Image 1 (cartoon, rainbow, N blue to C red):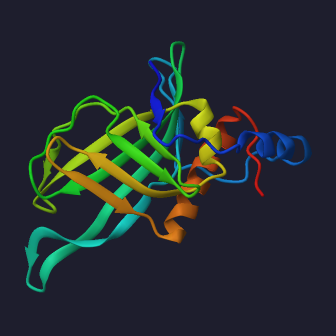
Image 2 (image 1 turned 135 degrees about the vertical axis):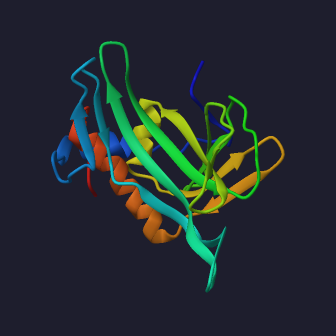
Length: 201
């Protein structure tokens, strides 16, 4: 079963200009990932970019003398893992929620790209963990990123992310700076693993 669904009836033709550009310009090693290591026990290689803060500063449930502690709405981590049986990109959305929520193992993490495509990504079920630093529950939604979507995300930007819990929908808006930072993080991981050159316009 596919790990993504295109929810809009159109999928913009990003692949052709990418293929053309690949023939004329590419580069490796233009960035430094936050993690690039090999597990000595099972030889699994993990590459991860620096986490990107997304959304806005929000008040947490942790009270201080000056009022609620302010925190980032969410963080995104783009990574790659490779061993004898797996070779995949992953997108993890870490988000703080005020209440106990449930999310099913389904296509519940949606990306709205800047060309208006809506991509639904397969996530694993999660009930979150209590974070004493915020008095909120921390949820980590990890999704496999297929190769075709990876290529799309090296050129298109993610404008919004929606997380569909059983009883609540959380939509996160990315600023223009955050959109660019995320795209650069994705490119960085792709360049580091040298799976295929990533074109920089």
